[in-house]
Each structure stands twice: as structure tokens, then as C-alpha cells.
Length: 167
Image (cartoon, rainbow, N blue to C red; front, side):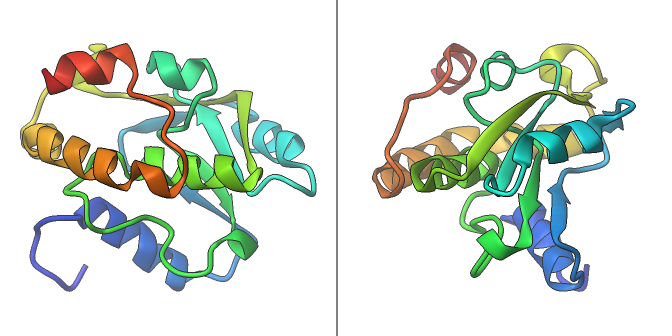
């Protein structure tokens, strides 16, 4: 990236990658993932011709495993008319907002068998490091921003995990 590290880095990177590609589908993820065999074909099969935001199963987050949203999503290009992710958050809730808008539009689905393991200290599947510390440092501020914007897509509530983290 050609900018200094700061607020919204993850969203900025996803948005820039989207602009620099032309494929029909773009995957929104980071470097803390392990793709399980068949993850892509499972997601595309569930997407069919209609769905545009396909949440993959991160195999850790309870809300994700219930299909409420995806931390890592396969996104159909035709659905995106501006930025893929809102850059106003420091890091957290960009995925929830993406999925919330897609749910409101009726183009969100969950691909339970599309397994993309998310390695993260919260799930005890990765050690804590400076990147994870930074990503959680402004969680409360991101939560407040998320709550202030939730009316835009119809808010469905925070997961128990997110309520504990925000307390």
C-alpha cells in the first residue's frame, strides 16, 4: 500500500484490491486464513445466479457458524457500486456492515460447507501479536460507529461474544 498505516487499513486494502482486479468474484479476507479443500466450489454453488455476498464458514465465530454474517466473504463484482467495505471503521464491523446491506437487499447467503478457517487469538487458534492488538484496540469505537450506522440496513443485534468484548 502507498499510504501510512492507520485507521481503516483493512477496508482500504480490500477496496484497492477490488479496483485492481476485474474478476466476477472477489474474496474479502486477510493472511490469517486456511482454505479448506472445495471452499470455492461450495461457495459458488450456494451463490447460484442470485446471491452476491456469500459468507464462508470461518469455523470459529459462533455467529458466523449460525449464518448470521461472514468474517470472510465471496463477493460478486456486479453487487458493488462503490467501495466494498466502509473505510470509517478502524478495523472491526466492516464484515458485519457488508453482510447487513446484502441481507437487506436479499443477496446474502451463507455457505456452511465453504470452510475457510480463521486463525485468531479470540478463538485460541493463533498467538496474539501486534497486528491483532491493533485490530482490537478501537473495538469499542468501531462498535459505536456500527451501532450509529445500523439503521441504514436494519440492525439485528450484536452476538454474545461482541457484547462481552464491548463491555
